[in-house]
Length: 227
Image (cartoon, helix red, strand yellow):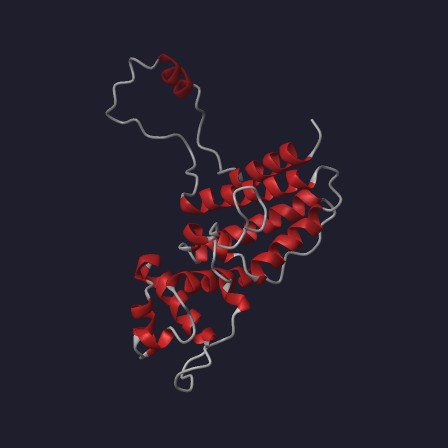
């Protein structure tokens, strides 16, 4: 939702954002598809076959038209990725209800974001594109700043915390944390005494802890509250 510094990203150099352009060009035949339909077809392809399957030709094929016809609505695949990103970010609405503590509310936001990444795995690879910060991404960012309004810290710290939050959520979405200890079956651990000692202190299996919640709470508290 934000750039590496946590701020809504600057547009790619020299490219007008797709949201500032008309729905379609003024020249050529009457439109047979809407921008909405094109983006929906692209998202469906990405969800089922992965981001690599999304090309102008493939999307056109899914719509039963020629690839050239899509250029009446979009100038490039980058435009398509921008629209796809912002469209699925819109699925975060409605935002979680207000909580008494800002940490609780931010954790709900993070859980909602994690669910979105799980539903659209390709999103993790495009969410940080600076040109992809559209209306829905800005609305999400604005909502986070509303939640953090009571926190007494520099605004830059809030930007950075939101960047870290998105990064950590992305990490969990890429690889869910496994419960229990790793398996070292068949490995000679004789040269690793500290590891052997640690494994010897591992107790019986316990229900998996909320590593996601603990991680986010600790990070947000550490980044946004005085030491």
